[in-house]
Length: 483
Ligand SMILES: Cc1cc2nc3c(=O)[nH]c(=O)nc-3n(C[C@H](O)[C@H](O)[C@H](O)COP(=O)(O)OP(=O)(O)OC[C@H]3O[C@@H](n4cnc5c(N)ncnc54)[C@H](O)[C@@H]3O)c2cc1C
Image (tube, rainbow, N blue to C red; front, side, top):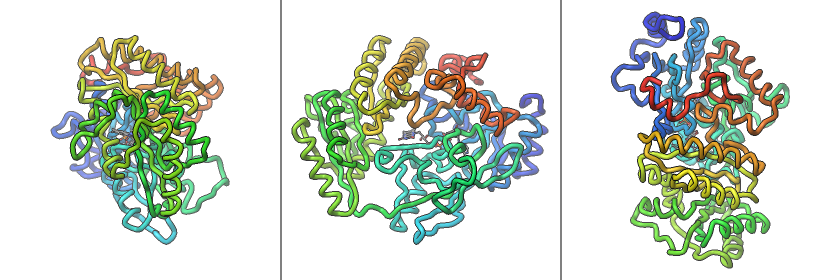
């Protein structure tokens, strides 16, 4: 039974709508991957009662209408790469997978525009743009698996957000299924729109709690003619962070300015594709930098980079660009592999406090008896703070929960925010209360009620305040195999 409704009866209605192959039992064969997202290494898993795989936007709206009529929770799922447990169906209900919404509705290279359905993978969107001489800059990791709808729902960033901004900056319009079960389109194939409240931006980053994104209109840009990369190794995080501030003060505009700390560098060195990445023995920090533009612009910016970084860096290295970003994508996996899992949070702080944030995170990790390491988007002040753990150890999970609690407090104390990219999902429910005043939290909750009066869209996710019953903790999620 889904809530008060009979699961078998709901399955029959969904089957009439979608066909039998597109309605799966949550405990059926070959569906385990729908129980988890990228937080599975933290032990978060849950089974939906039913999995619905609609094949069109109209079918998504019809599934939503059915769930709304019968008061059944509905959880949208994209590629399942989310890092906040947003797509994990913690309370059961119907999981709505967008994987079959793959149509390219329009590709207009001359107008720098693309209109695609939500289930297209991020890498496919990037490739389509590139094959037409254009570029779709947002580049969250896991692009082979994540979907453009999931990127919109989490307002995903990535290294190139440094110059080009996050996914939402490239969305001019979107179509969504909203309660009680109809399709709306907000925005369109135009770049400016101040006619109404900005519903498009409300849906961007709403993590499936306000509506289900079915299609997006994307702005593209001409691909930069040249992109040059550089790795700058520094002796300490403090020196590396100071170099970031020097680059900004010098007016250099990097396309990407990521950092990786010494622990992560050494763990991931072996993940370099043609052998080991040689790390200078004294290096405790590396900046991964890209500059782009016309050939002349890119080379001029590169020369400026070298001039600013040379005095402080231990070594400057010029690797192959693709190899560098592929390695950067592998860092998370290499770090996870050390103890079988990791807790990874992504606080964001004003960039001038980056060095302090990293030093205090290291101290927090050590005090809680866990190995910590960090990487992230340096110029954005976005820190991916990782605690290595054994996902089967209650002790580790409890220590990580205490440490992350202190980390969120630290972010807010430094004038920052609890999440720069990954969102609130199931794991950070209530943390926003540290950051926002009560009236703002109330507005957040009222907006949810306006869009979703029955509270059925991804319930328990993106909660501004802790609910009376606490959101699932890592330990409680693990101790209940069905939750
Ligand atoms: C190795 C790795 C690296 C990553 N690097 C980055 C990074 O650099 N920057 C970054 O921002 N993120 C990063 N992420 C996080 C993740 O990849 C992004 O958040 C991604 O955009 C999620 O897309 P998805 O399709 O996998 O969504 P899912 O995980 O399926 O879902 C994420 C959330 O969006 C909702 N959702 C999904 N599709 C829809 C839809 N069509 N309509 C409404 N709601 C929907 C879900 O309910 C859930 O709440 C990384 C993850 C991994 C595993």
